[in-house]
Length: 271
Image 1 (tube, rainbow, N blue to C red):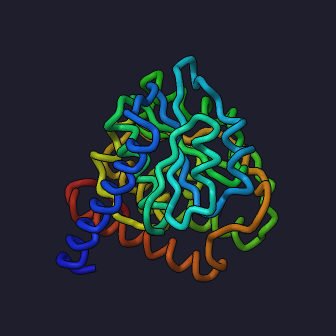
Image 2 (cartoon, helix red, strand yellow):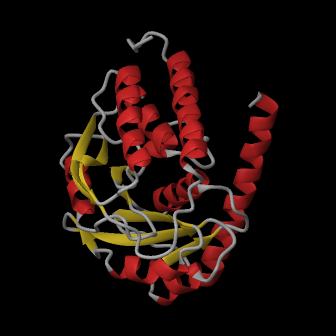
């Protein structure tokens, strides 16, 4: 993407974010986010979201937690379910992708009092107990960025192609960053609330690899913790087919690595 197109997309993103935040405040009043913000991006997850948010903890590692669900456009009623349960639902007016939705959630958390962010998913594949597992190393000061790993823990996924992709991209990112990584696309992660603002995050959809690579190459102390990946509660994954997903995910890996390598030419990164 050329500089002009990137600048235009950033302007559109800022406009969409502002409209969504203004609607959130109009609907739910001034935002008061607890020290820990649990951020979830949701796209057409009305059938799952009630059970997901019911299981979310009110405290993580002894700190009060607030739940922020960012509905990525085309709201099917997901936002209303979240608000009726007493949590924050930020509804974007257009569908942009998971990456844009999570960035919006990070912004809301950071600008309204959160000290730490943990992420989960909207389809019930993650175990709420794992939020403490990933936050503890950040809270104790041992790590800046912690990723959950199904390979260190457990997975109920039976898609052989997807499971092979987890292995392949873990090996690739480990090689490129010279950092041991076992699971590059896990939805459970934890970091300081300020961290996303210190990184360059531009991927509208496939964002997990961008956040991971950027954090490592930014010099963050990185750790992994074992977590569990469960089957979806209901419905089908919104991700594209395995080939299409793999190609776009791989492009994101290489684009992010090349960008970060140019930013820090003195860092010893595998060629």
